[in-house]
Amino acid sequence: MNVSTHAVQPNLAPLPGIRNIIAIGSGKGGVGKSTTAVNLALALAADGARVGVLDADIYGPSVPAMLGLSGRPDSPDGKSIEPMRAHGVEAMSIGLLVDQDTPMIWRGPMATSALTQLLEQTRWGNGEVLDYLIVDLPPGTGDIQLTLSQKIPVAGAVIVTTPQEIATLDARKALKMFEKVEVPVLGLLENMAVHVCSHCGHAEHVFGSGGGRAMAERYGVPLLGSLPLDVGIREQGDAGVPVVASAPDSAAAQAYRSAARALAARLAERPRAAQPIAASLLG
Ligand SMILES: Nc1ncnc2c1ncn2[C@@H]1O[C@H](COP(=O)(O)OP(=O)(O)OP(=O)(O)O)[C@@H](O)[C@H]1O
Image 1 (cartoon, rainbow, N blue to C red):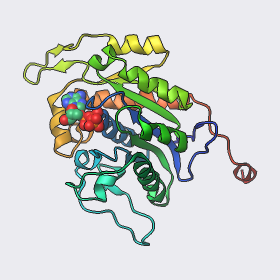
Image 2 (image 1 turned 30 degrees about the vertical axis):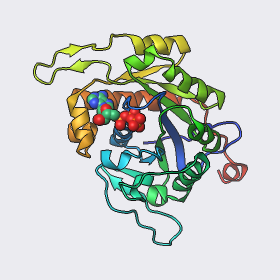
Image 3 (image 1 turned 180 degrees about the horizontal axis):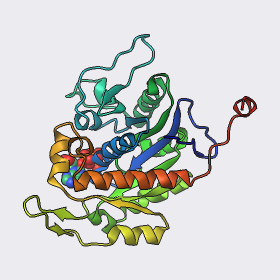
């Protein structure tokens, strides 16, 4: 697997040790953003990439539960932290550092700085370079997301939306926010698009069909995929083993795999990051 480092926002440079940071955002909560982020991460890893997941949802971290992680990460030198590993990906979350029942009662600047620390002090890749770091953003377009998109060098963003959300302006606001801070939107992912009956396999567009494609066309961004509303996705997410790992041959897992490939292909079309002069002299 040969993944290049792609261009980030104009005033930032990619972090050493991480080739591409991909932000997963949504206009509002509960659309399945975290579920999508972890399954995409596992799907990229299944294709041979070295992948990490950073849970940026400081107030409601759900990545540890979805990946079945518990316990505390190690900090051998007392300064940096070792990412935890599950299902072939690395992960870091504030949820791994504080008690599960402790609410994060922090103002925006504290939350933002906690997040930058989580990103920068985690020893991603264990000495090797990560191909992708998937960042699960909090829902919406608040303070934290905006600061993050301005400070963290992001190679591209993916917006997760449900068919109902498309009927509102929320997903469009997320899209506009990324455009404003010059983070390229790699595409939309329509979640809970089709319900597949677990008994008979009948597929039904509970919330209407074609919304994701219509929105993608209207805003000139690709539709990277449509993910089914599937009881297995919820059950396996709750059990800490995402469907891409627990049922790799299922239609749901295949939908994530194809969305991850569409994402990687779209990113590969983006310009590469400029090499620092020293690196280019060294060849
Ligand atoms: N495609 C799907 N099929 C069935 N259940 C799903 C699907 N996607 C997500 N879910 C379920 O919906 C619930 C919300 O999902 P998730 O936590 O991923 O949403 P979110 O957008 O990240 O929410 P938050 O705003 O809290 O961060 C979870 O119980 C999850 O298992």
